[in-house]
Length: 420
Image 1 (tube, helix red, strand yellow):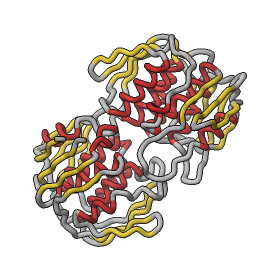
Image 2: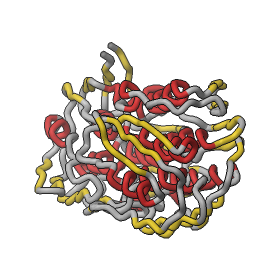
Image 3: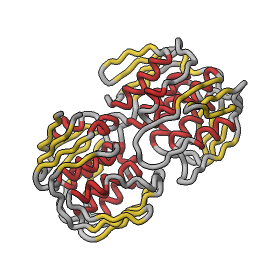
């Protein structure tokens, strides 16, 4: 099993290029199941989750050709066979194939999904929405079995206990694209990744309107065609490198970042006293006012502060002056990184769905263990700012969401290596 070793205390300097969005790529790859002909997906991040999704499509019968950061997918020979547990269990995003398979074959059998252990993430909204479209669904021995004589557009309210659901919105959008009539999704997710999926579907010939709002309109069509499409940059990766520049008191240019997708992250870092310069297709961050000050934070669905950046921002607050309260409203139990950060010198206590962070601390290098994807990123950030050497084990989580992390950080001057 691999580990990452980091010698901390080195200011990061230089330029880093942001990869394509993982959270856009997964549903877009699933959506190729709807197309007649070949789709060419560009700016595809080379990640474990992407590899898993391609294996699932290939298992179903898709013909796939990978060319650097692009992939050609022809799904005309796909068969309606059960999507296997051994692949689907590896990531939650694999549930996105349910909607397209049901729309195409009027029948689908998909294993219940897996992914990071960050608290309960039920798929009830997915199933509720598909039933509204006319599907009959049962859960049998760990598999979702769905069938429908036909899918018909309906008004669907998609609000859940913790707000809107990105994956449920994506699943229903794809299913509704080939349904009869018009579907209205109320309380739809408005994340940039949903807009990206809508743009891809529309390029294929779908009729999706108001993507990015909480009232999504989809008028069903009879067929969709294969197209070429470029995925948006990954806003979470961009935010992670922004924090990396700040905590190491460095000067980092983040190329390819779309500032409009990072509004809440930029706002909170500026509130803490950082300077973020927005340029065309890039951000520049320089930590010239150290120490920063603590600020309170609440994670919310987009355009609120993203839950996928909560752990990374908490690292910044550990080093900032004062006390901050970080409240998790999307996944209330997403605090598994706190124990390891405290081992490195942080002072964090949890009260229900809030973490109280007493700042002004120093991180000290030690041995730590990653628990999930974003927790892994947080430990890397803390290690970059720590005194001495840190060894991070179970780093396979990082392979799911950060393309070339070690190489990119090395290019910024970090003393980091990966070994087993």
